[in-house]
Every structure is written in structure tokens, then in C-alpha cells.
Length: 50
Image (cartoon, rainbow, N blue to C red; front, side, top):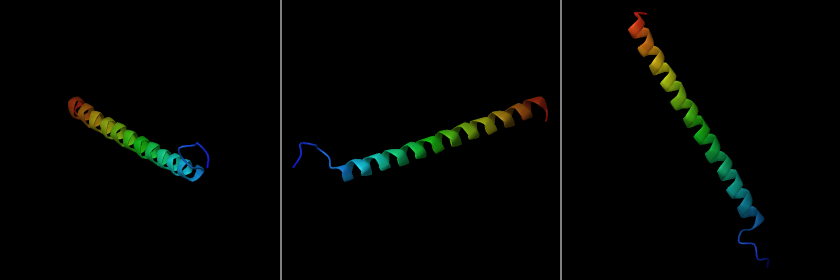
């Protein structure tokens, strides 16, 4: 038995989970950004009379 705390299978699972979490975080960032842009755009249109 090796001294490694995690087996290669465990490390592969951890890497896959990390990639999935990063993708979920990126999607949330894009959604918040898009909703902010839409809200700012609608406020700008209301102020300018459009």
C-alpha cells in the first residue's frame, strides 16, 4: 500500500466534481451578469422615454 492519502480513483472523482462545480459557478455568474444588464437596460429605457 502506498502512502498517498487518496487513490487515483478518488482523485479522478474529485477532479470531475471540481470541474462540474466550476461550470455551475460560471453559469451562475453569467446569469447574474445577464440579469443585471437587462435590469440596467430597462431602467435606462424608462428614464430616456423609450
